[in-house]
Structure formats: C-alpha cells, structure tokens
Length: 391
Image (cartoon, rainbow, N blue to C red; front, top):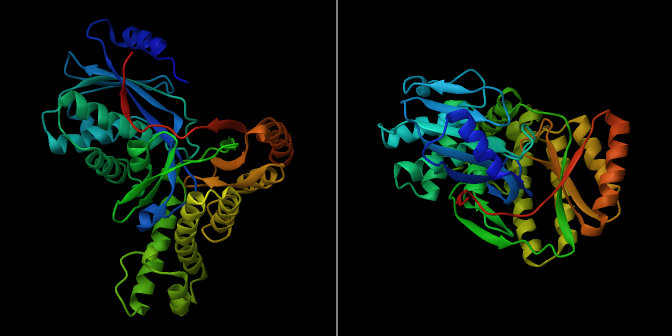
C-alpha cells in the first residue's frame, strides 16, 4: 500500500512548505471477463482493485503546473500554454489530457502542483493509465469546484485518452476506476452505460493477478490495429445485414453465422468479429452464474475467454499462454485468462485461498523454466472507486 505520510514528506521536499495538499486515490481495475468489448458497445464485468494511484495536489503559487511522480524520473514544469500540448510519449500526457478536457469546461482553470504515486505495476493491463487520468480529473474537479458528476468525469477521461493521448480505448477502464464499489463487480453495458453492481461472493476463493513480466505499450501495440480490423468487419456485416447494426455486439452468434459469408474472403476480420460477438455473450452467462454462486462455471468461462483472445483476437503472447497453462495446472484453480488489452501484461486467476502459496511457488518455477521471465503475484480485493483521502 502507498505510504501517504512518506508521500507528503516528498511533496514538501519537491514543492516546498506552504498550503497542505489534498490527497486523492483512484484504484486500478481488473476485468474479470469481457475483453476488447468496451469499444464495441458490449458488456463487461470489471472491478476496482486495492492497488492504484495516489495524488497529492494543491494550487501552484507561480502560475506553472508541476507534475512529478515517485514512479518516474521526469518532472514537468509547464506554463498554461505548454499544458495544452502533448509532451512526447511521457506519462505526464495522462494528467495533461485531463487538464486539457477540463479547460473545455472552464478555461481559467488555474495551475497546480501535483505528486503522483502508484503501486500498480506499470504497463501490465491493470489500468494504471486510467487510474492516473481519473484521479487527476476528479481532484481538479474538486479543487476548482467544477461540479462535474462521476459519469461526466468518466466521459471526460475517455475523451482525454482518445483525443489527447491518442489511444482509441473504450470506456470500461475509466468507468471501473470511477464507479467501483468494495466487494462488488459491475456489469456494464458500454453502449448505454447502464450498469449493475454485483456482489462478488468469493468465499473460500480469491482473485490472483499474475504479472507476466512482459511489458506492453498500448499506444504502440496492436490495440489500434484490432480496433480498425473490428470496425472493418462491422462495415462489411452492415452491408450484408437486413437490419440496422450499430456495433458488433448488436449481433447474436446465430445472426453472425447467417452473415458470415460477407467475411469469407477476410478470415482475420471474421475472427475479430467472432471474438467480440461470442465474448459479449460469455459476459451475459458469466453474470448469471455469478448470481447463482456457481464459481466453477465462472472459471470455465474465464478459460474460454482466454482461448478466444488467443485464437480469434490474437492479443495474447507465447509467454502469457504459458502463464495461463501453468496456472490451470495448479489444483484449486477454477479459471485463468489474460486481462487487459493484451500483448503482454497480466493474467487473472480464480482459485482457492488455501492454494495461493502453492500457486505462487509452482507457477513461478515452471513459468521461469519455460520463458526465462519472472512472474509476480498479487491477491487483490474488489475496492472503492476514486475518492478523497483524509490524512
């Protein structure tokens, strides 16, 4: 967990004594099932986790915005004009993106001194970027008294990542880290933004994140390529359909099979579309089995999801596949899958709490032997969305 007293001491060391900063925290998130569905308007089932990003922030006395982090060396000291521009490919683009969109709400927003500290492994698919962006947007909304609702902040954060950072992500990550509740997952319709908080009755089971040690860079990965391929498939299916289709998840598996001839000469596009449509239906089944308390069935759906992400959407890697295989070989594991956008990052497994030690020891050794990589393990608890913290 982040030591807030130590973080406050670092804040004063960097920015000097004076007005006490306010403190905000935004969690990371793990998506339990429903991957690469959010930007197709489908259903997802994420939860917040008890790791995330703390932000200490106060108004700046000299008119410059200062952005620093305990996780990165770069410190940015920027004028109001400089804050409007993307700064290379550095981490500061996430808080700058939030400021850019907030200035569309109130042009004279002021300047701030900010110190971020995160305990989410960066670049692993647990939404460290959304966590940074949302905590900045939420904090400035509070300090400046802009009055934006949580849903308004979700939309603003997604727009910042799309328009400023340059990643065509869906809305799930921002929604999850903003709206999460302790000991709940949320069934979210990414098209209508209707959602239901669903209690996670895990009992003797738990969620374990395994960091593959294989870093991914979303903006430089195949994420945008998958986005384009899926939309190309949608365009073809629209031409062949006898009814209006707004997004791939409007189609059932049966409807897709009837229209499959439209993609017969494009097997890659067909595979991308099939994953989206079948994964969306998997989320519906997953929500039902969770409500029934059938964790065995939920685990099976997690594993089916991974197979689809590996074979149809092609976002897994040899290392991730090895990690999932070794995870499933441990007694007491019900399901395991890649989580996040893929191309490296993390897996999430559902397993018995009394199997955690065996899991970590066995998987670590066998995964290292197969890949040469060191895995890191973290049991997570479903936790609260972005909020202010009192020191």
